[in-house]
Length: 364
Image (cartoon, rainbow, N blue to C red; front, side, top):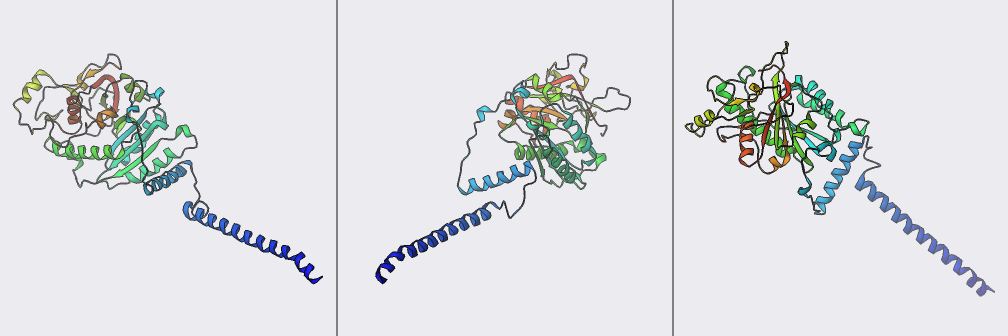
């Protein structure tokens, strides 16, 4: 009887031991998975993602670190990047670029005008390069970037905002800013600033680049679509000064055409001589766009040989193929006018709209 009783209860004790072992293994696996997930992703113990943009930033940084550790590759078909006359309908991205120095007084109106534009905000990126600044420009930019990127309505959020800082240790008193003798040096530093900003901010999705002055005071809300519809490589409106009596005062004299007289004069110039517009010290005999008739069609275009950058719309292919802002003398020009000369030398078209008026603050 004792032998039969032992045989009967042995399997029960074996099942208990097997159950305990299985439970221990399952508990170990669950504990390991939980520990790994908390350590790797940090979603439960590190922080809470408060906004959609913060979540995107978090996922982007995680993806970036993951791909770098796994030596991942990226394929981007640059053939698909095209700037067209129907940019809004084609959902083409625009990059707005603005170099800044002690610009805080102008920023409220600058952002107001950008936000008033009718081009879709989710297709607009904005990038700044702040140089040699001792006011609160950077703090104001960060504050506004937070507003633009975290609006409740997704359609009112901008695609991206970037703030870069690069000092050149170049100081010029405000009252000497437009002195004739200092212009080549000043413009050379401005060219370097633009090139830093362009190379830092241009991304594969950008079909257009808009160079925008911080101290404009008014332009049409539809200006982006209007200039895009002209469908040329580089286009600028006619920039006038803001005046209390609404009189006609030209501002951006860097938008000009060469003439037979100006070209003949250049044949005898030293190759390193920089030509400047709007100065009586050296007359160039060029045709300035601010002196052209403004009663024609708003989008009637004229070919230009030099441009400024108060509001200059560029198809991104122009910059991608190598046209930048020379800080050295290029065909007697530097910076924006040198850019226009370079773009034309590469076969791109440069145009202005004499009857399309925008307004600049009266600051020089």
